[in-house]
Amino acid sequence: MAQRWSVDRVVAAAPDSASEVAGRRLASPGPWQGVGVDEDLLWGECRGSGRTPYRVSVDTAGPRYKCSCPSRKFPCKHALGLLFLWAQGQVNPDGSVRPPAGAGFAERATGPEAEASGRTPEQLAAARQRAERRADRVTGGLIELDRWLADQIRGGLARAATDPYGWAEPVAARMIDAQASGVANWLRRLPGVIASGPGWPERLLGELAGLHLLARAWARIDELPDDLAATVRARIGFTVPRADVLATEPVRDRWVALGVRDLEEEQVSTRRVWLRGQRTDRWAVVLLFSANGAPWEMPLLPGTALDADLHFYPGRPPLRALLGESHGSAEPVQGWRIGGDDAAGAARAYADALAADPWTRQHPALVTGLVGVEDRRFALVDETGAAVPLTGPEEVLWRLLALAPGVGVTLFGEWSDAGLAPGSIVDGRVRPL
Image (cartoon, rainbow, N blue to C red; front, side, top):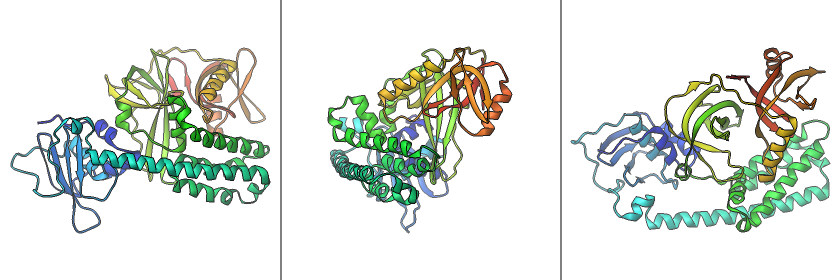
């Protein structure tokens, strides 16, 4: 009998976050019938919108996945739902139950290629063709984007203010067609820049310059160093399979969760969980996703630490990571003394991050100083007298002032062009704001 997969391993097999969320929704006995497992072979039938249920099977030794649904994703949400069901202990071995004969159920994988990739040569060739077609679509879309950017500069930015939400929407929709979702999301954030108050034309020009730089970087993607090319692909909207990330060399440390930041979207919201290694002093960020208001699944709560392996995505600077194997349970942080930078040191670290990734918008920082407020403008003043503007919701800033009135404090936060958005106080323990 094969060892049952963990939920984390099923998550790692998902081709993207949307498939993971869809698979979790199917991880209940309700839509399933004829479910069974025998040694390495897992099978079942999942009811869909049609009269005929989808036949699903997984050879967990390969792994190999087979489903009669029309999805081109690999594995599909039905295979993931069956794996989640199994990982949760809801599929029990029964030697009297056999997989139904006929099309739609896989044989056990054999041969070195099946063991290596879980895909047939035909599937691998089809995947390469899909990748080539997508690259062509992205190239065509970004050529059009660059032309549109040039038109905006020639025509002046004032017209953007006459219709902030309709101004860039046609080209954003074109980026969706070109499978450049990251660029589309960037364009749809521009109305917020236009509405940001005095000085918006300068800020909008900076955003358009960033888009132009991204389009030019894609045009020369084959000439870029591997880590920078990975960053460009990520900014455009390409994803790296979780399984590929988890196959990289892990970094083991006792990782402290310093803070979270939520980005609300219409359908899928994103949460950034910032971590710091106590032994390596390395930063990391784990991204979580919630579809349609589903509850967050937090691997670490702010103020706790976990001895665990992290696997880092390609890119520079290498910050985004996946949580791998844990070596114990999360515990509250106690007695952790770590010094913060002054304003100049934090600014240099942000400048280094920008040099590595010109499209970055925030960078983690630990900064030490006194919290003050004047004319409802908050600042952190370091020992040299340099002031760092504090940004974020006023209720968070007033709470910070109440917790650290007139005393030196080390703050964790996200450093950006606007200043420091504080997330927690670090004083031997981590106190989230």
